[in-house]
Length: 411
Image 1 (cartoon, rainbow, N blue to C red):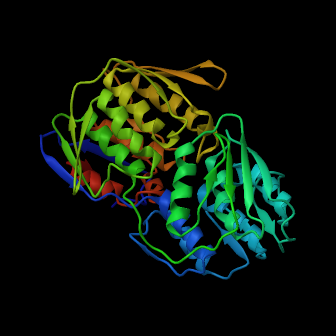
Image 2 (spheres, rainbow, N blue to C red; image 1 turned 135 degrees about the vertical axis):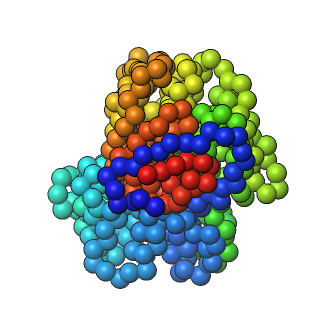
């Protein structure tokens, strides 16, 4: 693998064939299981732990008794460990890359301090690095948190709630984004013996409980699966079998299969996985990504390359990811003649596809793993280059090797 080069060139072998891929494990599920298992005394057995750098960073830091936890660029790791260390009163400094220090965390810190945590900022208020001290005792059993913020804040509070002496009630204000990620958290907690309860549409009750030992096999990653839907959609006769990918997944990005049934890919689930093949597609689409923001980039590229006009909703959280993903998409999609235009203030975006007659072929990744993997399938349309290919290590270290199995020539 050429993970240290500044860029790689990709040209796809377009001959028809079936390729079988073993996807990485879900880092979203793995990160939740790691925190919950640690809160329960590390008595459980976690099988098929994700090889993603984010997950390996989480695993390593939880095992290390060091004063400084450097999460690198892992947003989930930063947020989950902040809550974990905050309620346990660990004497820690949490830091990360320069980009991580630009990603807001104030809402979570405010909530934890309201609970009784002792957290201060080493630099700019509302942003890492953080200094965590002794827990001051539970001050309240009720929090109100905005529902339209990162679901990782809400999941972080959910996971630490059972170990609080009085438990916790969390009320979510306004529109609730990424609800499937909240549900994923609840389901992983349940596998470790803890029950949570929705009270109406916007409030979750978590009584004080003890996490039990559990043996868990981490699911294959549906976010990673999205790039293979793109390869099938943009390829000419390529079929893909994704091993052990399940229809009844607890991951929100399972929605990819349903969306792609109208955007050019059929999914047939078997006991051994999911078989993807190309079918006809609609000429236009309207998609709300509120519950599945991580597949927005992939679908934007698919629609642009296939000439599908797409109204895109629920992209608000993309501004505070590894990069400003909306700005990054606008710049890179313009290279293939497509426009992504805001039509209502941070609520609706319209993708107008162009044509691929004279596309630019070099794509910048903005230190964002999903930009690299979302644009890589364009190689099935024309030869391309991807800058900074090592960014895929964050979630899918074997991506380029797997691409070769599908016929990609990488140099």
